[in-house]
Length: 445
Image (cartoon, rainbow, N blue to C red; front, top):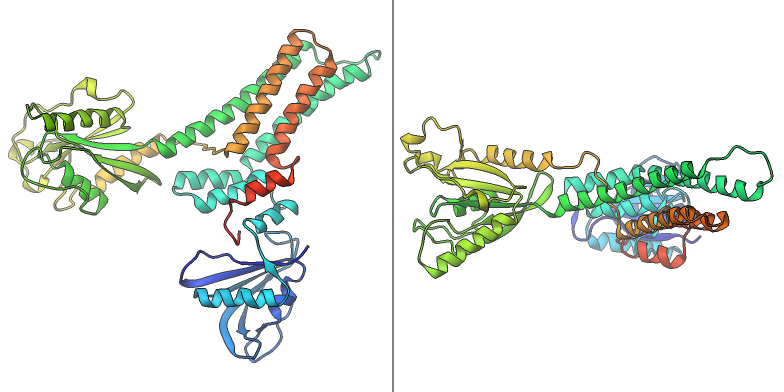
């Protein structure tokens, strides 16, 4: 297999940049333009980082770098690999790639390093797909789920399912091939129970993935309260930017203002709303209706109370708070707290001075994290599709068993389920499927 090369660090400038080669000629190509300080030839010393000088063909210094040679199969791709850690100037990195191309390498295609790792048995297809998830994760939860897939959580699950299916198929085929022999085989009821348990396991895995996906996309935190309670100022303080207009005039906010930020390892949407009060102004009434809509779509509601005013009964209408939402009540403007609130046990904050904001953020993070699944699973669309098909094949098998269909036909449905499981891990693959999967990867990975 030919030798490939690519820049494996992110685009743009940085302190360091990485150029990676993989293939049987990786060391000879890279060492042709790399020398130790003083001009000595680099030794083929695997797994030892060497300080090197990268030289132009005319002998001029291009850059100083670290040269790391990994002898296959003890490398990411399973092939001989060289990683050159240079200064992160794109001009340098592109020139290093040019030198590699002149030496006989070719540019790597998208995801080709990971594709080679898959082909060389370093990763199964599930683990290979998780690489993209890890690289592109936008939250701690998504990263953790990707890391679990990389560690083989789904692969081990599928191995167990495959083992059970093979055992089930073997029972049926033994019944076909040795029908005249005195063999002790499972009863129809036992086989039905086994297939039913496998279906339940598959559906549970699918449901776990749906739950994790929901956790990644569903968080909306809505600030609500009377006009002039300081909701907009609190939104700006939480975002650390002036996103919403602020005024001392009650009813300034007539529409919802939403902005995303990272919280508790995921992206949440913070929503500022029009204050709830009695008003005959049609525009303000329309704004309050949007407030009620935002409340219905929220998972966390921050009820902002104006702490600078005398204490009074201020409660959200129960019918306006969705049953699934958590409510956090905060006493805003604590920098000029009214004496009535001196003994209050509410969380005191000040959007102006920042007092109490860290505590509020901790409460928000705790609320979000308490809803995180303990064992997050994120299935790719392709994986979900094959799991559903495997479950459907087993459901058809159960119907055939109930109808006393010939065992040969029953065995075909079990094989169909096995084929779907194999398609997930890559035990059964086609070039078209692999090309589609790895084409979504970045160059250099």
